[in-house]
Structure formats: C-alpha cells, structure tokens
Length: 207
Image (tube, rainbow, N blue to C red):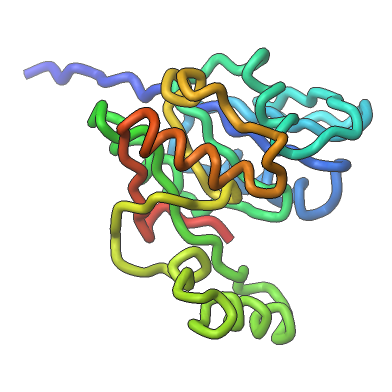
C-alpha cells in the first residue's frame, strides 16, 4: 500500500542580533542539523555582513530594538509558523519536530519550551542557570530554564517561542513601545484578546 507523504509546514526561524558573533554562528550550525528540514532562517543584525550560511537570509535592520527586528522579519518570511530564538540560544535536534505537531490544533496559537544552560558551558555559567531556575532566582518561573511538566502558560519570553503566522499578524505582532515587556504583551494579546492557547512543552528545548 502506498503511503501518502504529509508535507511539513514551512517554519521561519527569526533571530534578532547586534552582529554575527560566535554564539550566533553556533546557533545557525545547530539549526542546520535539525531533524526537521522544511525551514528558513532569518537573521537581523544591525549592519550588513558578507557572512553566508545555508538556508539563511541576513537582513541588516539598523540599531533598532529586538522587538522591532522581529516585526520587520514579517516582511521577508515565507513560513506559516514563526520560531523566535535569541542569538545566544541553539535548539535541540528535535526542537521543531516536537513543536510543529501542536499547530494541528487551531486553538493553539503558540508553543514554547525551556532554555537550559548548555552542557559545554563553564561551572560559573551553569551556576547562573541554576539560580535562574531556582524558586529564589526565578520566582516560580523555573520551568523557563529547566524542563518541567507540560502546561498551558499565559506569558513566555521570546528566547524560544513559536507562533502561527496568522495569529501573530492578527494581534499586530510585538508592541515595541512595551520593550522590554513586549513578550508579555504579545502573550496577553494572543490569550486574552485573541482567545487562543500557548502550550509549554519541555521537549521544545533550546540551550
């Protein structure tokens, strides 16, 4: 019996940055190793660069806020899902595969997951991560920095945040006038104003 091939939806991975630094180079190389192949990468540094990476579009954006860069990316993306990453984060190999399946449910506008300290980091860097994940340092938001149980959330930072493009457009994207609280504003717009869900899954993991 012949099997019907189900096309993976195209994901546009958006990374605002000041410049093409070593962390960002590592992130792009890790993205290119994902076990999900239907994606494009958009990097928005301040200035033009001659650096080239496979499947990557580099868009010089000027010295504007990260939120403004993420909104600017909308003019260039082709994907039906937008995946926002910070320039010092890189994904686990199954990051997109685990995330994309949620978007079959039209009531889910966005999904997210923890950003944990990379295993290659120094002891001091790992200690900083542990503090952020603790009740004292994270104020009950430790699930943002360590894998915890799956849950519905109302607020999550854009370090590791994937959203359906149509839902993102419907709420007007990020409101940069709220920077650095634009992540919270977007999540409130998606859940309160738009009536959709945001799901946290520990398997949607970045380092």
